[in-house]
Image 1 (cartoon, helix red, strand yellow):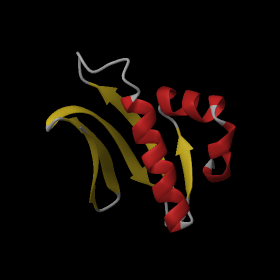
Image 2: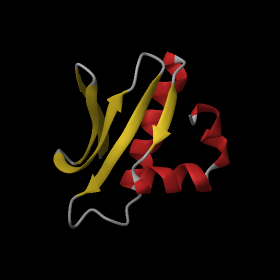
Image 3: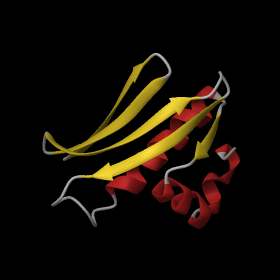
Image 4: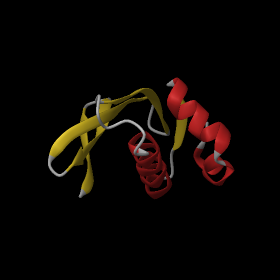
Length: 94
């Protein structure tokens, strides 16, 4: 089973993905004002790559952005590539 949790402290936060309770990766972000956040890093642990976990975390961030009516600036190369490939999430791109 795959689960994603969000942790936030002050202006920084991260999405953490687990597979069967085991830490599989994270995507970190930083708030830039109150209307956007910057995805600055996506990392998947060895042994968990190729499972689409990075994409799942990007989509989780997109869902959060839509709910909070904010934008995402994808500075992380992985997140930027996901935004470039998937036009259905362009509505939240800053």
